[in-house]
Amino acid sequence: MMHHIHDVENWQRVNGELAAYCFPGGYPLLYLDGADTVLCAACAEASIGADFERDRPVVCTVNWQTPTDCGSCGSLIACAYPKED
Ligand SMILES: [Zn+2]
Image (cartoon, rainbow, N blue to C red; front, side, top):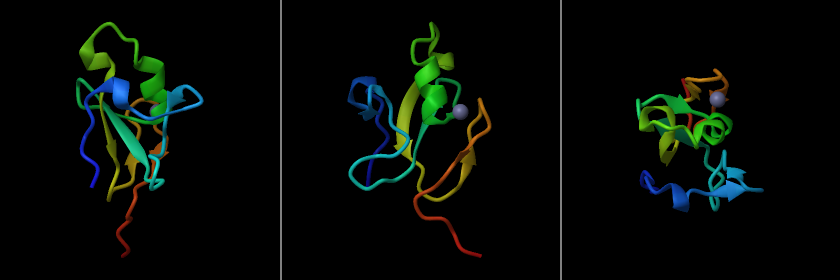
């Protein structure tokens, strides 16, 4: 089980940009900014240099069970284990 990673320096990158999927495992990653807004990898990357903590990503974690919309661009962040219904 991957824990929330708060240390930006340890976040995974692909070609220099924040990863959308973790390796190993390939699980979808989501990011949270200081205001607890969900961000996709692209939006996290775009805001990582923001002046205020509420505006920049501070948590990176696997999105385990619930498909979630990015709170910035609205794109869907897939989850690792979707519930079937
Ligand atoms: Zn986004």
